[in-house]
Amino acid sequence: MLSTDGNPRMNEISRSDVFRLLSANQRLLERLEAENTRLRRSVAELMLEIQALREALGYPQSESDP
Image (cartoon, rainbow, N blue to C red; front, side):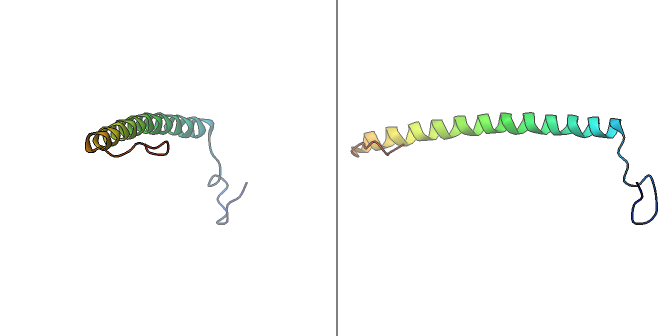
């Protein structure tokens, strides 16, 4: 396959390049999943704090409140 500048190696990707990119993407996915888990846990804790504050202040509780 030729690139626009005529260099036949410009558009070639080796198997090792593909595996390196897949490995990097896998590590990124794992980091993002871990961060997502941490953020979900933080949101749940904040929702519990909001609920406790509302109860302490005597706000009526509705089904749509967090």
